[in-house]
Image 1: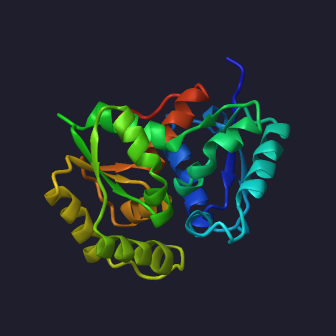
Image 2 (image 1 turned 90 degrees about the horizontal axis):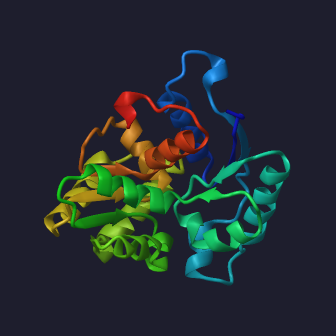
Length: 239
C-alpha cells in the first residue's frame, strides 16, 4: 500500500498539536520507525484566536491563515489534513473548499466513536470553548446522529473557559477538582457520557490519567481516525 501522509494544521493551540502527534505515535501498532505514519506538522502558533473571532467578528479572522496553511500542507504532499482544534471546525467547510485533499472532521469522528463505545447512549454532554458551544457545531452533529445533548450552565462554562485559557493554555496548574465537578454536573443533567470537545481538555485527561468510559476524548478519536485512514493498524487497547 502506498504510504499516506498526514498533514497537521496545528498551532491551535501549540500544546494540543504536539500532544496530538504524540497520540498518533503511541496509538499506532508499530514495532519500527518505518511502520509509523508520515506527518507534516505546521505548528503555526500565531493564528488568531478562534473563540475571540466567533464571539466578535471584529477581532482578527483566523480563516485566511488556516486556509493558507491547509494549502501549504496540500502542496507539501499531505493526503489527509487534520486540525487538532475543535473550535477551529467552525471554519471547517471553508477550509475544506480551499483544498482537494480530505480534512478529517474531529467532531464527526468523536460523536461516531461515542455511539460505538458508550452503552445505551442517548445523551452527550459537551465540554468545549464558548466559541464551539455558541456555534452549535457539536449540537448539530449530535442531533444528526439522533442523540440529545447538554451544555454546562453559564457559570460552569465561565469556569471551564478559565481552566482552558488561564490554566492549560497558560501552562499553569489545573484545578482538577473543579473540572471533575463540571463533568459531574453534566452527568446529573442526564448525560450518559461527556465529550472533551476542546483539545486543551484532552491534555487534562492525559495529565491526570482520567481513564473513564463516560469521558470521550475528541483528540484520541481524531488520532484513531488518522491512523486508520492512513492505512496503519491501531493498538488493540486503543480501539
